[in-house]
Length: 254
View 1 (cartoon, helix red, strand yellow):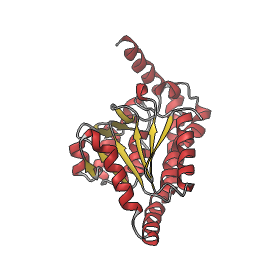
View 2 (view 1 turned 135 degrees about the vertical axis):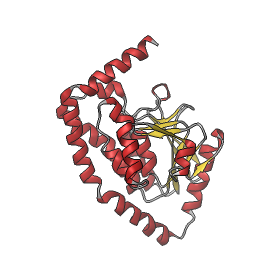
View 3 (view 1 turned 180 degrees about the vertical axis):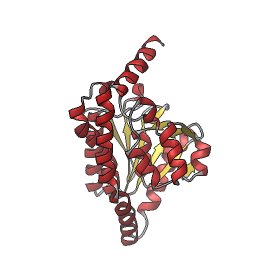
View 4 (view 1 turned 45 degrees about the horizontal axis):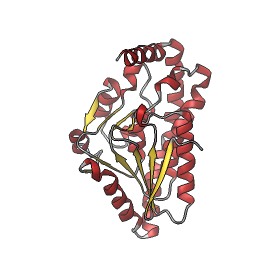
């Protein structure tokens, strides 16, 4: 195990932090694997009653795919690399315990999707979220699927096709954020919500979460296959790679 994922116990609640703050906690393959493995372990741990997901530092929850790693992805690797990331979403849904996303900063792409598949979301007023992949030459397929479980068709189209980000006020207005609190209260509030949900009657909680899981996973495989095809076609054109090269070059100059 590396230290790309950190776990802190707060009583009976486990706080799992994505730990690449210098890279906006962007998801590498290693981080995705470790996140999924940690979720499985925490779900099996009888001393853990709930899980809070957050990011290290104060800039980002998770900024989606790590661009340096994505740049090196070849077409024949897309299904495997995309599958590793998507397994994080699946494991969050499969976790029997409450999973609360504590958004301490920007959450885009895969990071936004992690928040969307969590049971509830806590953020502060400075948080922004969205699906900017299309602006990097990558189809927004899996993201648009998760958004469809929360928002209407027209707004989903706008977010997925323009790649614009929502601020906290807009995300709250549309019901994406369940609580907006001061920055230093994001994780504590998420822990309180996890404890609250963990205290529900066991069968009522389990069956309620199971039903949401069934609905969410019903279209997962179809979205995954479409996402693989879309990314394979995109990377075959070289457009995502060209965007990443330009982006990284600007970042280096700055």
